[in-house]
Each structure stands twice: as structure tokens, then as C-alpha cells.
Image (cartoon, rainbow, N blue to C red):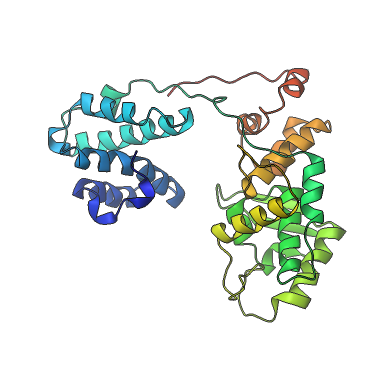
Length: 305
């Protein structure tokens, strides 16, 4: 199977770029636009690689593509189908193809519980934190980052963009506008996290005139890739078994949700901590602990689009 990472921009069709320009005219978030383009990139490349133009596209070509990615997860295949349907609707409206997306995908079943999210036990999380030596280079930064991830389950992008303005020292709270939905989320600034951040700011970060709290070793805003490397580094250092599991920052968010549930915290409160607008989203995070879910009588949601 062809890796999407290796696909070059020049290999994409002109209709793909026309669709990209169309998405720019819509009142949608950049994340949504990127999501729609990401999941049609492989489809567009598949057609070109097989000598199929969008002008002579048939429904069978679409189904053949879906069969070619049968080894992917149910969630990924669902995302591809949804985004291809959007793409075909656009092409039909532009009279490039002779059928719209609903002709090919009248219904797309949503497999909510098709995969189990990765999470780690409270004991493993404690080992992860203890593995950080704050006297090492960037140890103070890494310690503060891990504490924020395991304590609040803060989203990766929100951690990357965390600035001085987000920390209300006198009120002992962290206030952020979530990048995903622009909703305000507040976290109590615990003594442990407060002093971990102060230790990093005063004794390691230096007086770099950037608004972001966490910087790279080259004094630039930290990236998602660098955050993954930081988390993965301490998983290895703590000798935590990550075989067959995700081991980046998002796995710590999952771990927090499971820990809260196992300690008797209600799903509504967990939803607030994670910054979810809908409890259904929180249920998906918690599907790893089936016995606990049964105890609080959560329904398994099923829906079609």
C-alpha cells in the first residue's frame, strides 16, 4: 500500500486543488479543512496511479479504492468514506463527475467501539513522572510538560500554544481557549504544577521573548513531534511496556480519563476535565473500562450518517 506521507504535492490532481480552494470559502475551521483534504489525498493518488481521471470516474472505481484500503482500521475507512463523499458532492456540483457522494455512500456506519484506545495504569504513570531527572538538560521543562499532560489531560495543541497569559498565578488556575472548539476550559493550578512551571521558567527557559511557555533547545515554540519524542523518551526510561499501544501525549489523556473513572468520578465531571462538549465523546474515551461502564449504565451509542 502506498504511504500518504510519501505522496508529493505535484502528484495530486488539479481537481484536488480546486476542492481545496473551495474549502477555503466555507465557514469551517482549518482543522476541518485539513481533515477533509487528508482523507481524500490517498483516493486522489490511487486514481492517478491507476490511470483513472475524475472526468471518467465510476462508482466501481470508488469501491475498488475502498477495497484497496481494507487493511486499515474501521475508523480510518469511515473517515475516508465521509471525506470522499464530500469531495464527490463538490465534483458533481461542478459537473466534473456524473454522480454525487450520496449515490456511492448512501449510509456510512459509525463504528464507535471498533478500536480500544491506549492507556496506562496509575502505577505506570507514576513511574513515568519519577523517571524524569530535573537536573538533566531540559529536565525541568520535561517534568512540567508531563505533569500537565497526566494531571489535566490537556490537548497537544493547547499545550504547544500555552502562554504566559493562560496562567493566572494569583487565582491559582490555568485558563485556555481550546483550539479544537474555541471553548474556555479552566484547570486548578496545583502547588506541584505551579512550582514545576516556575522552576522551569526561572532556572532553565531563560529570558526568551516568546509568549509560549515551552520552547525547544533552539529556543523556538515546541512542536507536536518534539512533544511525542519527550513523552516516548520517558516511557522508555521508565521501562514501561508500550508494545502494541500508543505511547505519545494522547495516551496520557486516555490514561487520565480511565483513572478518573476507576476512582469513581462521574462521566459528567470527566467530560468537563477533558474539555468535551458532548458526553458521547467522553464515553468513547472510557470504553476501555467495560466493567466500570456497566456499573454506571452507559449506553453504547449507535448512529449512521
